[in-house]
Image (cartoon, rainbow, N blue to C red; front, side, top):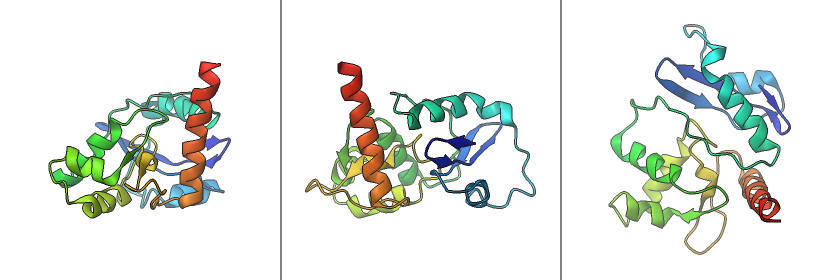
Amino acid sequence: MHTSWGWVGILSSVYGIRRLTLPRDTRGLALSELGDLSNKKLDQDSFSNLEKKLQAYFSGEIVIFNEITDLAEYPLFTQSVWHNTRQIGYGQSASYRDIAIKVGSPKSFRAVGQALKRNPVPIIIPCHRIICNNGSIGGFNGGTTLKEDLLKLEKDALVKAKS
């Protein structure tokens, strides 16, 4: 699908959303990040509501992503990190340490970072909202500029909503 920020690839199963790409310059790049699609059936209807939400999100509207995901094949620690990351509100942020504490392993902030690096559904699981404990931006698969842009998009939408 095409958004105002670029092409986004979406892959779902009958159980939920399996993959979501960050915006890319071309449709081909977005699709290639979804992996080998030769044995997968793409059911456009299963994520048409998600497409509308992504369009609104990248247009600067406040959107809550409550889509069901299909991520059961990942380790429990990773799923716990993603679950807790998903609880961070729109326009808010938390630190890697905050998430480590929530998953019950306060010293595992590096492992939290590695789990977020493997996030197959960015935006739905808002890993861009996780920053370093000292307030610096931290890493992001889409690059730190995109992370900063997404955080700014959300903060600007909240300011606009309050005015």
